[in-house]
Length: 391
Image (cartoon, one colour):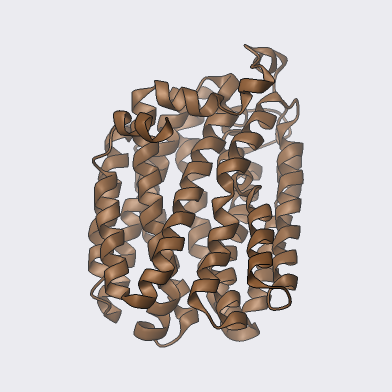
């Protein structure tokens, strides 16, 4: 482990950034609903900040792989992301919805910095012998953030207003800037290995994913699972209002899922090699499908149980996905593979939100049933399907 930078610093920064990110989604949904009165407009705002990651991820990954101090690049991205959240809040209700969604899309270009961009730096913080456990701990930061972020969004929105929840989420992202700034530098050998021409740099992550069947399968399974999670996210405000008594309470469902995900990952961290990560990625999709089918009953008790089951599928799936990426990624392309994978997942989530919002307005059980079918389909996709989708 590099001198002067510990795994604790890495994890603390990751939790802060990812908590702010996880809080921002529900906060923007609630703020959009409160200021526009439209579920479709609110879901469009969330879709806007996520869908642009398809462009931002590969660009950010290429820059990270070429940077001598990738942490400083990440720090700048985090600061701009936090500023973008503030700008969206200022524009919301004052500018046309289309302009606000465009501003959200510009902010979303930096979204992969909080997920794949950060995780790609893990091998420079943890040595090879400690990487499996560090990988599980890193995945747990997502679960911890998913637990804290939506809960904080719901509480702040209920007590201080949805707009304040957006401000708090931006502040959390900003607090992670110092930890990102101090991330270890890249070694000269790793930085100079097999340089990629600028013309092909952006597509390098896609090409490696396509050419490695196990990585392709895990990537597509996780991407389709994220589409199902996006459909659920669009349903959450209505589930809160119609089933739990208030729109803000719906965000607490994310915290229930995160709590069980954190517990499942804590068990997995004790035995990181007990089951192959490839198997866990597929099994996680099936568990999520069962949870979403249960949520379609739209009853308070079963809704909470569904959220807990969902987390049992989500948490280990994410840990396993990271393990596959670390195993399959060449060091000189690690940043691009992680940010490209994050971009694909974020974009799929956005598409799920975009589809789920109007569908939930028409039929809430129908939207959740479609989400369950999508998650079930994720378990059966293969590398051939990924090559077809990626061209």
